[in-house]
Image 1 (cartoon, rainbow, N blue to C red):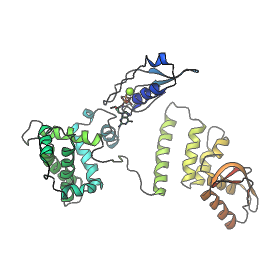
Image 2 (image 1 turned 90 degrees about the vertical axis):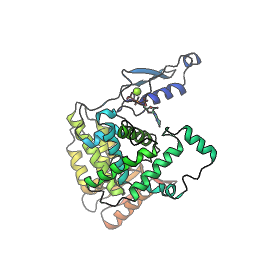
Image 3 (image 1 turned 180 degrees about the vertical axis):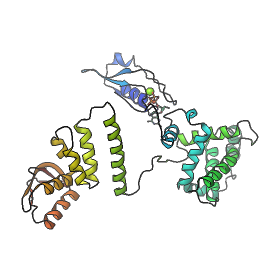
Image 4 (image 1 turned 30 degrees about the horizontal axis):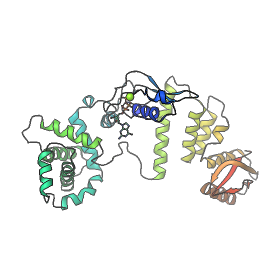
Length: 352
Ligand SMILES: Nc1nc2c(ncn2[C@@H]2O[C@H](COP(=O)(O)OP(=O)(O)OP(=O)(O)O)[C@@H](O)[C@H]2O)c(=O)[nH]1
Ligand SMILES: [Mg+2]
């Protein structure tokens, strides 16, 4: 079953699976098609598309799902910008302004510096004719390049603190004023601002204005682990409040996130407070050998031996950590009974 927020490509994926599915030639001749559309909310009911015979397997395409209300204005703008909700819910102009505020805060525009230096008007007769023919088609390369050049020049020549909302707004207004010319819109054209906004959003959504991460993703690995942990915890808490019945894999995910962030005490507390009995999956979390070792350390008396045996995959860096720990803490003895295979050692935490 394909489930997700609207307009992420569920129906397109269902169609592709159906098309390449291992089904009989007769059935291939009767291929069904789920509706694919650039607008969110086009799929209105659940439909089954066959993707394999013997045994018969179907993929279920479902309508996009969404929380009943989104209280966070930024999340709402991000969803609208990616096309998951209709533009009119935020407003086309407001959305284009929001995109420009992201654009102005990123370095993406800097790679267009050479467009500003190159002789933009130095073109052949053929190109000149094409330009006249497709003057108002904003998807033509020469229009896209002019938009990029215009944006580059507007941002790089702007002097002001963009952290200040008022100043950011001034730059956005200035960009709107010059973008009309880049899109070949007369300044006195009806609905000038809305037309600029619609064309700009279209260029952004077709990837012609670069790629942007709308969620503020952290840049170093420690920060990113904390960020993932916060996100994971947030969704875990939401699930707890919902009617979803939490199961071992949900708990495993949180223990894994805590382990990766080095928060072993919190992970231990989390396991102790689990309303369901922790099973082996909790201990066999991939990449969390260090977590397993931390639990072993917390739960064994000094000078006791901790045995590890074949099974749990321990990569090179994990193994190095184990070796260091045995050197620093006298009471840890790591016995590797697994054989080295490529650059991994296969071990299993046997006793704690
Ligand atoms: N660039 C790109 N566009 C895609 C891809 N898959 C789907 N699309 C486009 O994304 C838009 C939405 O696709 P759908 O398959 O209708 O999305 P959906 O998730 O079924 O949407 P709802 O039914 O509204 O929930 C359409 O314009 C597709 O052409 C992809 O892999 N790459
Ligand atoms: Mg759909």
